[in-house]
Length: 188
Image 1 (tube, rainbow, N blue to C red):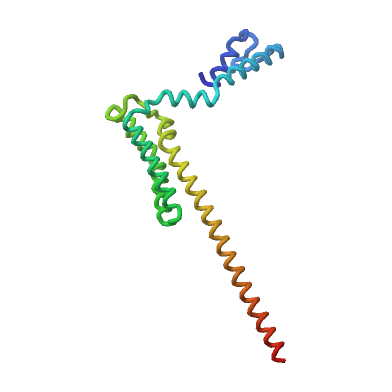
Image 2: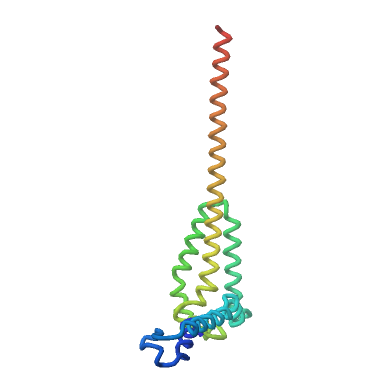
């Protein structure tokens, strides 16, 4: 049950004369309202995020070849992102490829929804795209975020390298000036 349905069920249990047409309490004992709210919160604690994740994991048949192929594909993309982390051009191409795949996930979902009997044991592809977002777009977005972090780290390293070179150049120029001044003093 959704949270709204659970909350509405508590109001349905109230006496009809204490609830208005739009389901708001009209005249009710505050202690009953607090008790109802406490029951609602206890029921919400039973439906945690961990329960939802476990339900999703158990609902998917991970032994299906196309799901295993998808996991392998994500592993290859992650490996490629890590291997090419020092090659900016390849990183840009890979990032754009990932962005294009995520952008077209809705199209992939509608195609898969129409043809799921050809490759899957059950219908995973709902109209809202929850499954494809979870197993296809989600991992790709995580790899893209990792690539972004790696790019920022490379930019920070490059900035440090440039600043050090700048400071070394500045020290060389100061040393030249000092040497020129000492030679000028010696000549006098």
